[in-house]
Amino acid sequence: MNSIRPVRPGILIGLLGILFGIGWAFWLVLGHERLHASLEAASLTVVPLHEQEASHNAENQIESAVRRTHNNGAEHMHVKKEAMPVSTQEAHGHGGGHNDALTELTHTRLTRGHLHAMGLGLGAIIISFILAFTSASGWIKIAASTMAGLGGLIYPLAWIAMGYRTPSLGPEMAEASVTVIAAPGVGLFLAGALTAVFFVAKDMLMNKR
Image 1 (cartoon, rainbow, N blue to C red):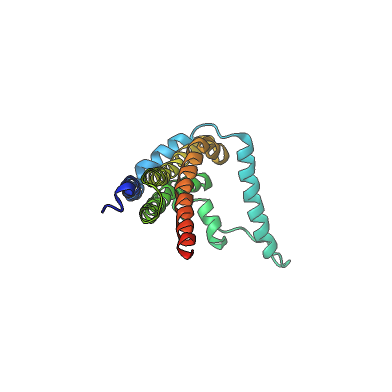
Image 2: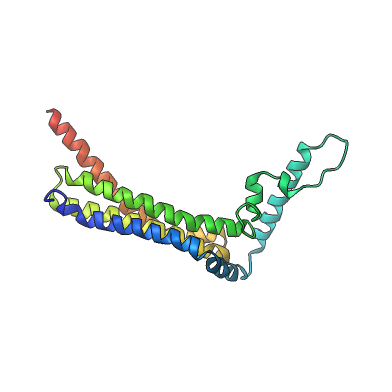
């Protein structure tokens, strides 16, 4: 217990991250209809013209590719939804139950918030335990474990914010808008992880002498 005392903040924040990830997964399932209602309301805003053109061009390319693969000169093929690849069906909302590709992307980004919260929360706990048994001083252990925990909690929030902003801002602008959240999250987590790696390597070299 004395060994893990300095890294308890990182362990606690990591556990909170895991609990948040579990809770967010329940919300995505139980509040699915309410979530989609809010996303559809946001998607009613004006979509930039270049995004509309890009979407139409992508659909035309898919149809052309399907026609080329069936171009044997015998008959003209009509593109059928059941003949499309699974990824194409999902892009039009038939595979995953979503209305369009933008809604599918939004749901994917929201789901990644859950996945990153679970993974980085567990990572922060592991980093904290590794730091606990290194030769790092107490304040370094506290700082590094806390940074890893905070980074693992902030970064998933960036994915969730990106998901909610995608219908109204579009994929690229939504991603750019959360850089101010994602970058510090990544930086904090990496700082904690690199500190742990440094002291593990240092202790291994010292023991060989």
